[in-house]
Each structure stands twice: as C-alpha cells, then as structure tokens.
Length: 204
Image 1: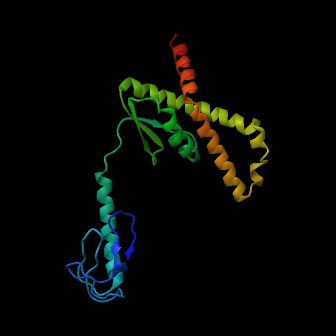
Image 2: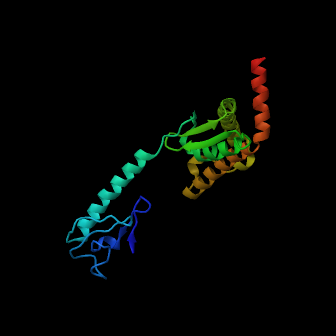
Image 3: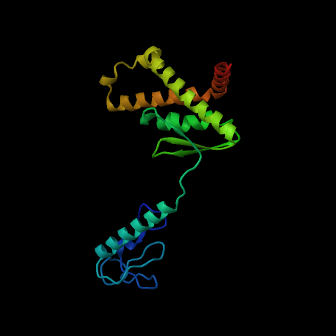
C-alpha cells in the first residue's frame, strides 16, 4: 500500500515501513523498526528506526522533485491574451470559450496559463494577431450581452434576488451563468463575421 503524494511516480511505499537496500520490506504488517524509507521512484533514505523519520525524509524528497520539475518546465511562449474579466468566468469564457471561438483558426495553437489567466497563442503571425483581437472583442461583447441577459431574460430573472439564494440555488445560478457564456461563444461563426466586418469598417 502506498501513501499518495502530489508528485506522480513518487509515492512513499508502505506508509513509511522499513525496507532493505534492495527494496524488500523488512517487517510485514507494521511500519516501525530499523530500515530504509522507500519511494516509488526507487530512491531510499538512510537507515532509520521510525516511520515518522522516513515520512519526514520523503516529504523533503518530494519537495525537491517538485522544485526540479517546476524549474524544468519551459515557460509558455507566444502572444499572450490576458483575461481581464472576473476570475470566476475564466473557466467558462476564458478556457472553454476560447477553445470554441478559435476552433476555426487552423494556423493557431491555443494554450492556457491558468495561474496568470492568460490565453497563449502560437502560429502564423497574421492569424495569431487576428485571433487575439477576435478573442478580446468577443469577450467584451459576451460580457455586455451577459449583463443584459441577467436583467432581461424571464427565466433567469424568475430566480429572484441573489441575496435570497440558498447555497444550492447559488450554485445553480452560477452554472446557469456559465452556460450562458459558453452558449454565447458557440455561435462563433456569426461572431467572427461581425468582428471582421467591424474591423473592416474601422480601417475604411
């Protein structure tokens, strides 16, 4: 049996039980006794007499692995489009919405920096520039329509004041809001037509 960690492939074996240098469990059925702590990756600690000491070693081992992996991960490069709307709309509009909106941009690769709430675009320079502008304008339009929908849609307004929501009703309201934003983005072909016509008008 293993003790889970936050780093895949690095679980502590036997809940800190004692193992030999060859990876054989020394005292089946208990975690005490002298021996080595064993990580799933095969690394062992110095000989010690308690499970606690082996667990403490493993925490440090996992922390080191996590730091090394983080340092090895390349920073996402490309054109970064910052999602400036409220963080709570990032999943529905920032990620899901962008995936749908840019689905027809075959020359553009889309990635997400969740920590920075940023969409990272790579590909043909002109296509990326168009995609970035389309995203920003469509996000703004989606939020405008969203504000209007909350006031005018009879089904939504029938929910009554937000302040009177129970926890369940609050979650259901939030899901309805997310569904609206995702649904707005699904009409991406018409949105792109409007965007390009607007852009051409601005250049005229």
